[in-house]
Image (cartoon, rainbow, N blue to C red; front, side):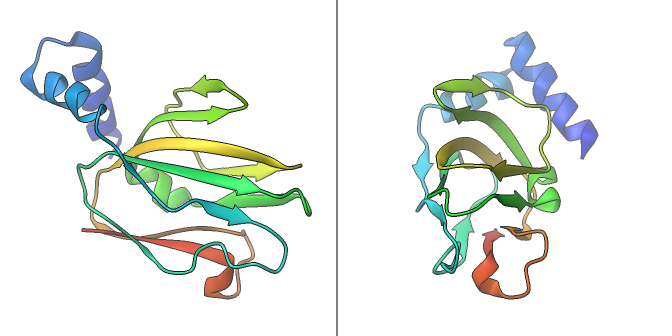
Length: 139
């Protein structure tokens, strides 16, 4: 997986390969996913997200600030290429993620491309039910 991410990074930096040029074009047409709303007592997602490997997506996570809530998904983050994470109009282009923590009301916008097919989750670290996690099915 690290080799794939390194290859993608190298191709994007060089800009000389057809793959890199196609990826840059791909980043202009994204699919907006239903936002994940983070609130005490509410499910994170009403149904699984169905994604296609190689397509570009935007996901918004919104917290109402009802309590401090961490959202984790190490396996999910290891199997996607994160283009950008925006928090309070600050854009971050991370090399990797493990999760987010909302200490207050706020919103995170993340754009990404799923790399590897599989079923992955984002949710509370101590999730005991499907209400406490969002499921992503990548085909």
